[in-house]
Length: 42
Length: 134
View (cartoon, rainbow over the protein chains, first blue to last red):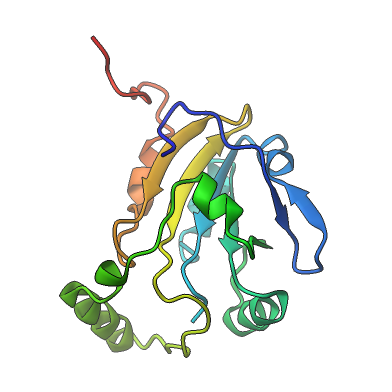
């Protein structure tokens, strides 16, 4: 379980085109990043 | 969230959506919904697991979910057929530029989401961000 103050896990997501997208590349280039994990699409 | 995008922009918060859907379904959904946020994929749900997001049959069928969907329909929201695991839970996590978690809100049920004001208030520099310890 991640809590406030924990480091974000090091992992890689994918773009819709199938390109790898490291999570760190998201937050390192923005002052704050809100990750919204969706349920099923619908 | 979409309606309050300007408030997030003003506070330099970038919103990124994550889904476990297939690329084809995700592209269709993005085109249909016009959500103004980037959508990334985690088809094997490694990120979901790493952030502690599980699945729950009981939570998905909780009676309050019927009220939740009724309210969505009353607002004119068009519901799409469920595609994918209906029991996977979501969550919201605010991360700073150094990769530290500022806000963690794993959903207890499908309707459990943090208030926008709660997310924005966590940016108050005078607010204690970590649990107090003795």
